[in-house]
Amino acid sequence: MNRSLQIRAALSVIVLVLSLIGLWPTYKAISISSEEREAAKQNPERLAEIAEIDAQAIRRGLDLKGGMYLVLEIETDGMDPAEAEDALQRTKESLVRRVDKFGVSEPEITTFGASRIIVKLPGVQDPERAKNLLGKTARLEFRLVRPDTELQGVLESLDKAFLDPAKVAEIKSREAAGDEADQTASADSAGTDLDNPFGTLEPGNAPDVSDDLYAAEHPFSHNLIAQPGLGGVGATLFLFEKNVPAVQTMLEDLRARRILKDEEFQMGDEPLTMEDGTRLRPLYLVDNVPALTGDRLEGAVPTASHKMPGFFEVSFTLDSRGARSFAKMTGDNVGRKLAISLDGRISSAPVIQSRIAGGQGSISGNFTSVEASDLALLLRAGALPADVYIAEERTVGPSLGSDSIRMGVSAAMYGSILVILFMLIYYRMSGLVTVIALISNILILMAVLAQFDLVLTLPGIAGIILTVGMAVDANVLINERIREELRKKKTVRASVQSGYLNATRTIVDANVTTLIAGGILIMFGTGPIKGFAVTLSIGILTSMFTALVMTRVIMELMTRNQGKKTISI
Image (cartoon, rainbow, N blue to C red; front, side, top):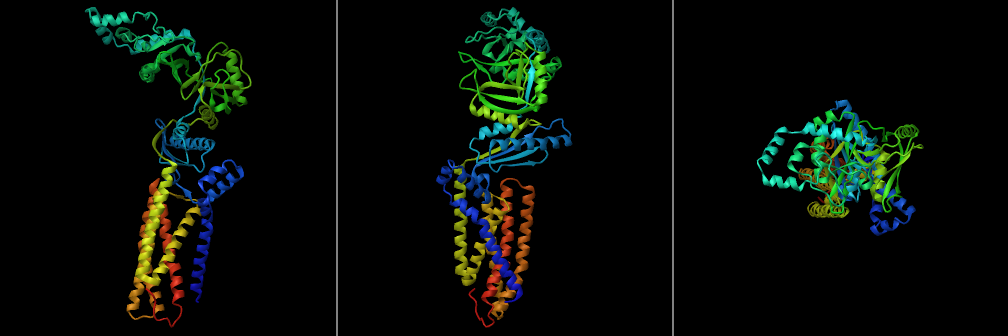
């Protein structure tokens, strides 16, 4: 046996042995039944052992394991490229902290382009909860509520800003002409005091204040009613839930912004439901600049509510600097209401009874245990530096992932069996060598995926199946070249050497061009395309190794006898 053959034989054995070792954790992971995994939840030691085995096994993508795929778009309007890049990176860091606290195993969070972040969450069982956790900005602010004495002037100014004189004149002209329908409508709304732009509301009796003339003369305030103390949320003004979009549009209008220079309106986070089913949304007039923000937050935990049994609240702690600011702010504003605002929506506005020292407080609301836990998580992880919205989402259930694995493995197995049968029938003993190379190729490919922590996806399984065909194609070229050399009356050993020599260039050229295409897909592709390209590229390299190195070792060992006259091919 010459030196070159010895090196190639040793290399083949070493690679094959390392591949089997690398795939051993994957085999152990597959061998653990679902019943055993469920039972391990009661045994922390066994659960940790299974988690360690899974960490070393081949990672499965969302389409095989089940989970959630999100593409988040960052609002970068008004930012220059440097600011947008900084916001993108800081948003990614905040999302990483949130996902870590959420407890998702093996998440994948990457940036894509100038304003997008791709989030992959394997095994997520509650997609809606995950979307709420990732999509919320979680900007906590404490804002002082403006005195009720300022409401009248602000509302009158907003009514004047949005007043349409032509519309008012048209309605008055109609009523003066004796439009009986309009007069009847006015009579029906007589319960509303037109001198009071707010109107009144008794719980369980929501009056209709949509009279045409009144609405035209009070385009903003006709949407509102005044009912101090209603629901115990600290609000004086309320609006019907159906009017929320119209009021929000007016508040975002430039005319409203000019009037609200030092203050702004913020709505409550949840509407109140009256006995008759009417839904009312609290509305607060607060300072334009927050007295304190969540940047000074040190901790947040969910706790049971003492005021509302059965519900939960979030207790928070401020750092030393935040505690000093909070104590000074509450001490200077005793008797005023302090609104707790999260992402521009107010959860409550209690009255400051006295100076609050110690930097501790709570956010109350009709929170369930899960909602309170999620809010505490968001506050601990920190606010996102920019607003985000979900541009794309895909969810795969665990059962669908299992079905995908089963169908993918079945397709690969049936395809491999047909190829093996063809090679054995057509090339006989040389076909057996090809079968050995084919099995070795798949083992090496899977071991590379496991050892380099690459992800196997459903398109990746398709890439493996394609690799099987490409590996066989290389061996077919070699076998046909050997047959051609045998027809030239060359010896068996010379025919094998010439066959490999002549086929190598063709095989390398064909595979390199495919490898270039695979590399481009890896660089520019995402999701399923990238998964397919990764396994295809690895499969090309492993198939070249098994075809040009491993099978050549076997064939040369079979024909090393100088007196050998024939070969089964």
